[in-house]
Image (cartoon, rainbow, N blue to C red; front, side, top):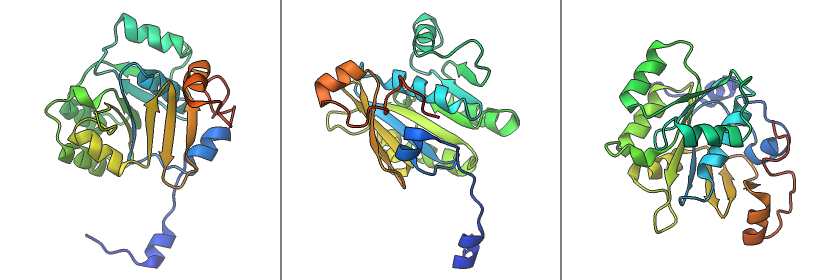
Length: 218
């Protein structure tokens, strides 16, 4: 493996995703690479948050949302409509469950494959190992993977692959009480309300009222 001098490091050119407003404040400068993680207990708003985020990111470039746990039937379609993803959005695409190997083949062989990919939910991939997460990120450095995972009894992501994803993530979002609490490398962190009224009852008023999905963000 090639060793990089400080000059080599400084000569690198980075392309950041053009966030604006509160997303810019929370996420800072983020490349389209590596992974993010969204995790939390069931029925707290993980998928709603993820779909909203996917909708926002699709304003930048095409997004593939793999609904591995729920599929692409009526309930998923209703959720997509509920968060306001429109028929006119040609950058948002959905898949039902697909194996990681089939996904790897799609990325490798389809030059038009989306470079932002959501996988909802890692818990469904029972044969997945933490090394598979490492290999996926290593083999496809120009893809941003956004993983979803359930939360275990200790308040951590459930399963070794999800724990590894959290360790490697440039940003992770802990969803609880209808709010997502962001921890971001190089960002300012923050709380994003999924349901403003419920989140305010549980966590108190958000001191940054723009940080919610009811207002423009990107």
